[in-house]
Length: 187
Image (tube, rainbow, N blue to C red):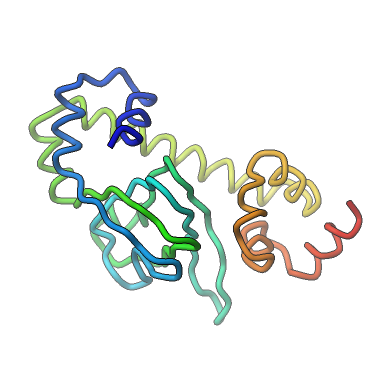
């Protein structure tokens, strides 16, 4: 539990009592490689913290799987639109390697918010971080050339290239496998 407590303390100076209240509601779960945390069409009813492992979020369009994001240890993961709205998810989140997670249910989280405004504030900060990452990825994918996107990925998130398949990386970078191969060959 030290990992999640340390991560949460990075977000804000949250009182120890609030942290303990939050940690009491967490459940530990192990997910084998290839298993889904949530599938397209299911309601995402748990916010997960990755203690150990690596996951990918993706959806299908025209029978093609499109990678949205990758998450690794010490990061939170959920199909956020589904988690917040409690409506079916448009994405699937799968473990790309065995994962150890801490999870909290949507209902437990809402109950904690009623009792502790510090936790509500913490959750808002987590959502803000999620939103900033989402916006940066949108800008990253729309306003940079394919080569710039690949070079930036190497510089800022080399673990993705090390852990994900080439096809998943190409999809995440919004380019074809051929384009990625050509870029890699010219570097």
